[in-house]
Length: 162
Image (cartoon, rainbow, N blue to C red; front, side):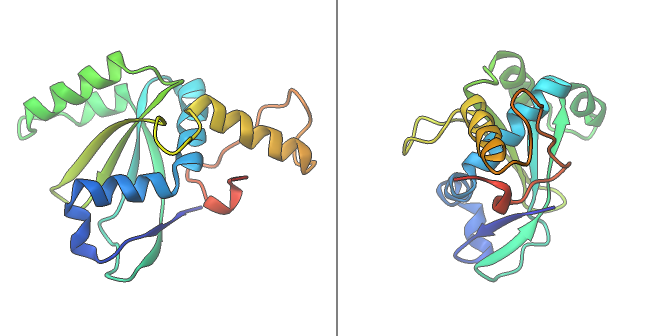
């Protein structure tokens, strides 16, 4: 399953403001996905692969969750250790109920990381986004009260109740 992202043009993704706008456009789904993954696997990063993003305004791509352990395995002699140290610091200090760490893979050699809270535009926290999704699924009869909702390894915005 995939997220639908809207961009002005492919090269606009080099702009941090455009990156954050892209994240904000699917925040409820990303936040719910991050909370679900944290509950199941512990601390980690929601990775969004944009390497094949076309120059069009709208495209789909998968999101996946990378745990701290998996991330630590990726560090090698060629890695930018200052970046990894910052990311590991974020991972050990962030509150998963309030924040999401997101990695945007822009190319084979460039990934931009964001440590974001839902403080803007009345967006739900990760825990709230998950609870809203669960409530919407209960209302739709897709799950029973108290039943844990199952997210696929990627997620689709049409699954998002907001």
